[in-house]
Length: 238
Image 1 (cartoon, rainbow, N blue to C red):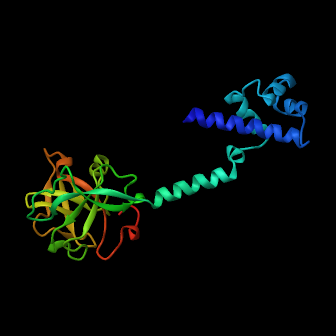
Image 2 (cartoon, rainbow, N blue to C red):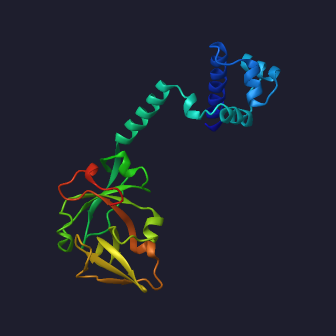
Image 3 (cartoon, rainbow, N blue to C red):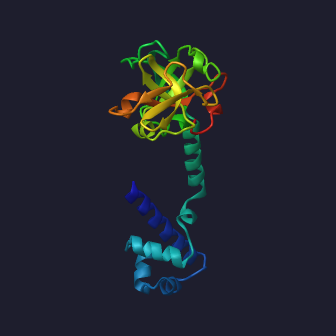
């Protein structure tokens, strides 16, 4: 891809030099003098008998005060931007785990032929192994989500290792996997409930970290569908 891009830029630059000579804006001699190469070399470049090296192309761009963007056809640029805009707006099918996530329920599993839920591309493009799961009733989080809500999960080990105080995570506890905000406190993890993330979890307020694999406790970061909200209403970062 890089070689194809370089070749395209070189061809466009040579065509721009030809255009300047053809329209009387410059001459082969003037271009050769400006760029510091011999006139025969410039003549062969314009005739297509010699190829521009990457270094020479870069030097000519600098001398002519051009950028790569100046060499891109406007219609090609518009088509490229439209393709990317369509990509960003595209809905992506994400697998839905089997079972409910919440206190008292076994950990949901991904089955071989899962149900899928469509999510906007921008919500999943940076996620690692994104999955969707349906939530069970959780009284401690009733002001945050309702039974039956769907949440999108990012299983990135980096996000699960470097915890953010404003995020929500799926935490594996003795009472089942639950959604909580979490904060480190010495050798413990504090589990916080509620929309303000200021109430200790009533059943499991803290989990010891000593001799514990953090990735076995923190199963995913939540990028989520809040109650009465659509996916595209969500702020970036959750």
